[in-house]
Image (cartoon, rainbow over all chains, first blue to last red):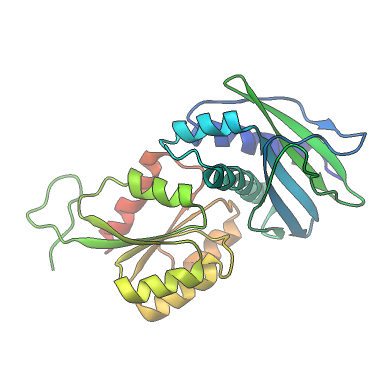
Length: 149
Length: 135
């Protein structure tokens, strides 16, 4: 089960991502445990499968509006569906990869996969509890969900 | 052989060819757009290790930026192949994997530098400058 210090790794990784890549800090809320089903996803969800010493998934889910502004901040002017998918996968990949600073190289991460649409079902990890890390950035809301055994 | 400008100015510049390897199109464009070196010419951009090897053979770059986590062939395996093809190639790993073991592994396979994502433009250019100095 995820420990408090481990959650902090993901909180710090999320904070760092927005500060550096987006050049504007995000407000990262206190993680909370999901007790009823899986949290709802936004229009784009970047998913990283984790294996090795820990098993589960980490995913970053965000609305199109947020990703559009994030792309602008990155000096991108391509706001296509493909670019949204690319970005949401890259965010999930960066935060998950950065977690290896604390988890070590046996925290094996996959290449990102991407779900689109708010009605899609995010992956469920049997035997794992899921924590949601709320993210607020420039009036947009997103989530990082960490579900590890 | 001409020397590369190090900020203090140099009498001669030699064009250097850069290959960018990352599975994210956004990241490939970011690296190309953010690098500040007149002597660098981006000769190709690959989305995985296999594409990188093919492009490497065709374009013969001097420098490579290399992601690690990619489909089909990851960056570590790709580095091994590129160094075998051209031992003098200079490789900067640009990866989200922030553990020391990965950095050590990459360097042992032949990489010359390691930059973690996320990075600022300044950090990118400092890392590339270091790469160029060794070229």
